[in-house]
Amino acid sequence: MDVVVIGAGLAGARVVESYREAGGGGSVAIVGAELHPPYHRPPLTKRILRGEAEPADALVRAAVDYRALDVDLRLDTAARALDLRNRRVELAGGEAVAFERLVIATGALPRRLPVPGVDLSGVFTLRTLDDSLAVRATAANADRAVVIGTGFIGLEVAASLRSRGLEVTIVDVAPAPFATLGAPVFSDYLVELYREQGIEMLLEDGVAAFAGDGALSSVVTASGRTLPAQLAVVGVGVAPATGWLEGCGLELENGVVVDSSYRSSADGVYAAGDVASFVDPVFGRRRRIEHWSNADYQGRALGRILAGIDEPYDRVSTFFTELFGTAYKFFGDSAATDHIELEGDFRDGRAVVRYYRGGDLHAALLTGQSEEREGELQERIRSDALAATA
Figure 1: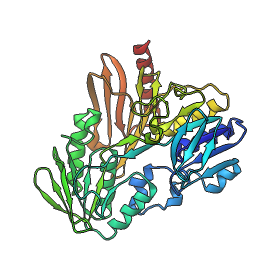
Figure 2 (figure 1 turned 30 degrees about the horizontal axis):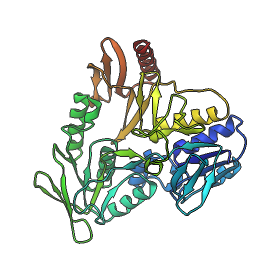
Figure 3 (figure 1 turned 60 degrees about the vertical axis):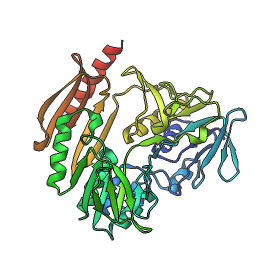
Figure 4 (figure 1 turned 180 degrees about the vertical axis):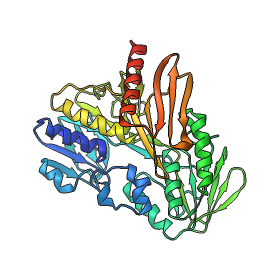
């Protein structure tokens, strides 16, 4: 194969789409471990979980469309090992696929809690489409749920389950929701919002065990509380899916190490999306970003690079979330910023938190802003960050 993409997620789909659109020729294959064609992950914790959308609604494109692109889409096929010397990927079924150029887009895997009862029926992580459907089916016959974690997955799942009518308790070892954002005013607002929605939030607490006879009946917290529940969803972060690459000779460190053009330490091997530890020239540091917008952008850019169009990473990173019908966006990189300023009020649906390093704007957390205002913020962040790294 001229181009082989390992990982049938958004980044992998965008690579082959962009490659063909830019005139890339030769044979192309996508190899994915799941049964489904590439799909968008944001709906999994929201519209699909709430029953407002079905699996087909989340697809990047229908399977037949990959045939129209002359792409060999191989699903339900996991990669087992990478043989750099012979330039081939060994697959779980014993087959091997040879490549001229390889794109690693295997994404990330959810972390599991190392506590008793984690394998009980009714205890889930939520990363895949099948996970979302399984949580949805369980929620249909449950009245109480416990969600572990106050990052993206935890807060989105808790909001969706509450909208389905379940009694929901959130448990997290962190002192505040979205604590990693470093915006206490936003965290305080979220605590108030979730409690107004009838969700109990137990912060600075953890899970000691999941209890039940075959199926979940309660969650025992580290502080000793017993929370009745028929459903638990663990959202405590993810790790890059690089286990199959161990020992192959590729440089790995918190993902596949690549440059700003997505090139790895091995000739003709690239990585994009959640699995890629890349050089961000805007902020002058190495990063790995686990969000839809990054997989979308990097996949498109890498496809053009493979087709001969030089397009290294050059953008202000973004992410978004939706909680109880309100969208929140984050632009830039808050690492090493030293103070924040608030404009507006999250309770009024219009607010901007600006993150500064000295007098330079490096990030912004916002809701209820116009596209023009969002564009102005992104341009200011980009300009200040580039000036700081010059």
